[in-house]
Length: 126
Image 1 (cartoon, rainbow, N blue to C red):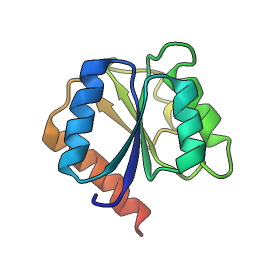
Image 2 (tube, rainbow, N blue to C red):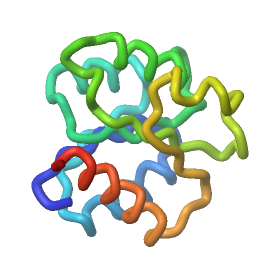
Image 3 (cartoon, helix red, strand yellow):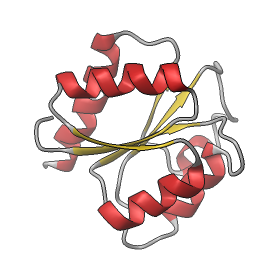
Image 4 (cartoon, rainbow, N blue to C red):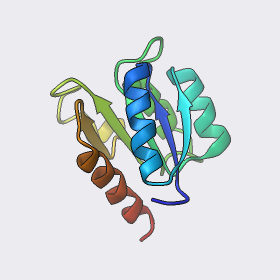
């Protein structure tokens, strides 16, 4: 995970602090956005290795933001992991169509968080 850039798009301050602390353990470079608009802009400017996307955001929600990112040819290959407190944030058949690589369900453990993220970094290194 070292030397990887992760963009966290999360409006809840407590959740942002947890994810930031977890990513620091993995020695990742961390970009933060409290809303989808800023997150999309940061993705375009920095081309992170991974995006952690909260589903329920003010303004543009995480589902719509993911669709926007995935339609940009420069960003379409960045894995996006949905971070949600909902058991099923959308219909299961829609999940791949939206563009999410994976899900993290709140609350999650440090082990689950790091394992999920590390799995996607390994895939991108192949």
